[in-house]
Length: 264
Image 1 (cartoon, one colour):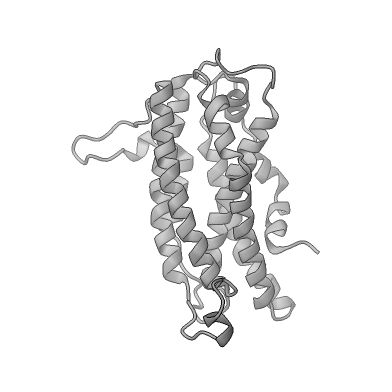
Image 2: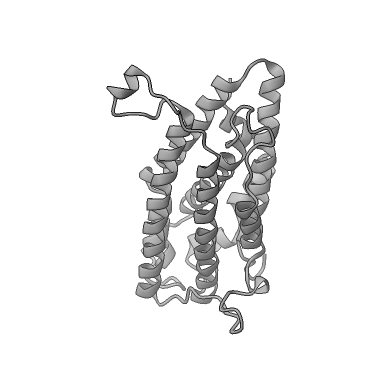
């Protein structure tokens, strides 16, 4: 029997493909992305990070952490048996990772001469909405609109938010793993239009075993919590519907996050 997160992934193969296989990724794998286009995408991805951080705060506010501890908990350094504590630990690590990722963006961009700034409105000091990719606008709306379940006393009030985080991390991993599979191993990237930034630096970072394990860790938390929360077929279907809404919203945002390229 498929797990909850496996069911989400299998629910819309075409949507998942659109979110993780694009002409932009194909060009990235071939080394034919211009520095200008790659820089524009990275600039949007940096602002995505800002939304991700805000969303992490919202997710943390939805967690109902245990107000009492058992004797076993007091003698065990691992307090993550309950889903809320496990999610707390995951989000804390996610924030550490995302800060490191932001520094990696900037240092790699400087190394390869990539401009990772979008135009700024001088009257507000902020990036105008029109300058952002549609995918970024969708993610900002998703992140800033995260809410706990309408029934805060019901099961897993954090489920929708956790699915958004899982979906975006899963799609990011799958997208760059697919791009890596399209690469010509005989080319070293030196002659790439971006100077080798994607194929010599970014792809290895975005397809690492550590990143894959981090994504699977969140899947395990969600899957375990759903199993424990299911009380009959009606409850199972209600949880599935809640997760599916957010999964599909992320697929649409991810598909819209890849910039158009010439000929696509």
